Image 1 (cartoon, rainbow, N blue to C red):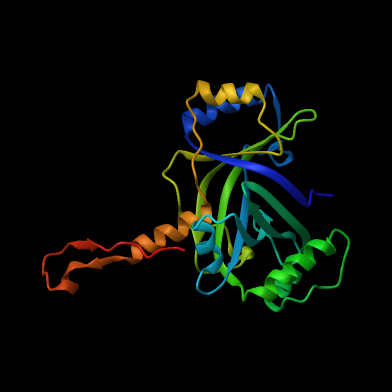
Image 2: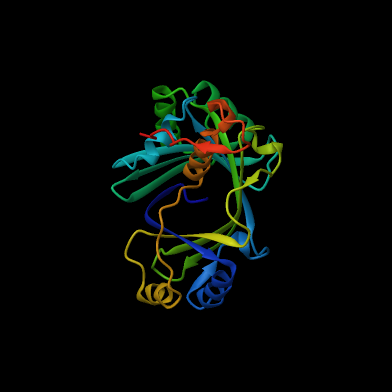
Length: 261
């Protein structure tokens, strides 16, 4: 059975393709590739993020409170109506990330997230997680808000250490056709050749990995996929044509973005 509960600290790093390939060569000495990467160099992950109509969850998250949460529906590849998907709640409190999820059929997941009623339990479904998600659906009127997908290569620590390192590229999103089965496409979030590296562990990272980061001058950054999409949309929305101010020249005037808190 797939792991359903994760408690980890996470750090993110933005790297280019050259750095990715250098790290890839070194990681194989200490870590094992994800099962999905045994056959393919990368695999696709698709998500539908749920939020309120006024984007309350992502606005709260961007304000960097001690506690924040996100709700999403995840599939590996493009599913059909009978495919297994995961309903996930991701919480973060004082730097510790807790992710809880339950598997279910895609059609059942859509119904559950739409009406907030837990479906009939079937093998592989986690009733405790479903009750937590049911509570969130009762607290907020959530609707499908963003499709977000990416291609991933991931590694797991060998032995007792639970270190996980993942690399995401071709991060793409859309605000329409908010169905996982609608297809894997969208607007690109990063420049071509850039990778988002995420390092996750419930304990301190091993010394060999810290040295690897230092050797390649890789430094942590604050980056949220959903948050970046939302922030970019705000920036575009506040580019007002100068003609609106009586200036006939064809230029634009930048207006400060609204506060996200």
